[in-house]
Amino acid sequence: MTRYNFFRRVNWGRFSVVSVPYLWLAIFFFIPFVVVFKISLSEAAIAVPPYTPILDWNLEEAYVTLKISLSNYLFLLEDDFYLSAYLSSIKVAAISTFFTLLVAFPIAYLMARTEGSTRALLLALVILPFWTSFLLRVYAWMGLLKKNGLINETLMSLGLIDQPLIMMQTDFAVYIGIVYTYLPFMVLPLYSALEKMDMTLLEAAEDLGARPYQSFFLITLPLAMPGVIAGCLLVFIPAVGEFVIPALLGGSDTLMIGRVLWDEFFLNRDWPMASGVAVVMLIILVLPIMLIRNSQGKEGAA
Image (cartoon, rainbow, N blue to C red; front, side):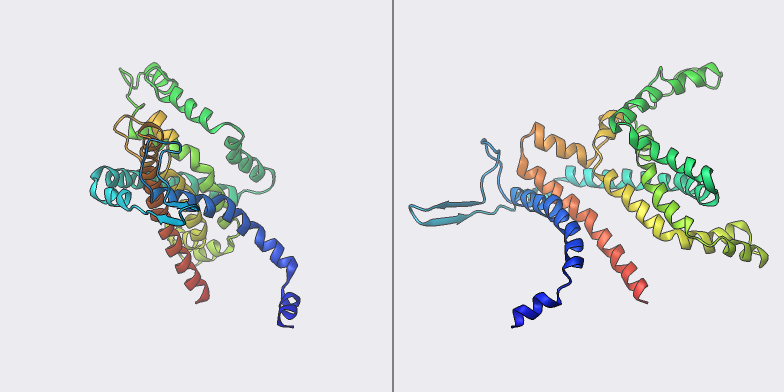
């Protein structure tokens, strides 16, 4: 009878709708994470796949062996190379996110203040880069930034410089590539937040004697903060693990965790160490998100 009442109380329509995203997360996030975490607890071996199983059993002799190794995580703590890679990735991602926000905010504000077909045109221009290949856009920046590229040729033809500027294989090129590539991910959340803002609040602030910069910091920025947080997370998280842009635009001294993962997986064939690096990177990224969501939940409850 209790079981019958339970099935009667369940809203199966709501349950089926809610279960779809959770099922998606379980298949494409949780299960792969469990597999990677399992590999990180094994040891490298000359085999296919190149690691030892952590669970071994023999039905004939009736035994089960569980062998878990934490040596990969201990090595991460002992070797300064991995710490430098994490810190360098976080630094590059943070600086790129900051400049992406500086570029995206005026664009999103302009889109929110325009009306009709002009707004639709600006929105289409922001989304337009998604219609082309990510790799093709990075290669385009290689053509722009190299010594005989369009930027150097234009500056030299105008007489602004005497010799080509060295922009390729530098951190500057990496920042340019990340800012350009992830700019739509910052613009769209900002536009969504600013578009809902009541513009009469700015008029009221002006009538009360507030200067433009005061209205921005006291009204516009606080109301746009949900979009700022969402956009920064959408840019910062993938930028930390970025591999293609540093590999093509950065120099040999550009150390990022994505390159370390590539080297461990494909050059060293050390899958357990690479899995450990990936697990630690995921923890570093997930913890700030959980803290931000928790603080937002408390503010919403208050």
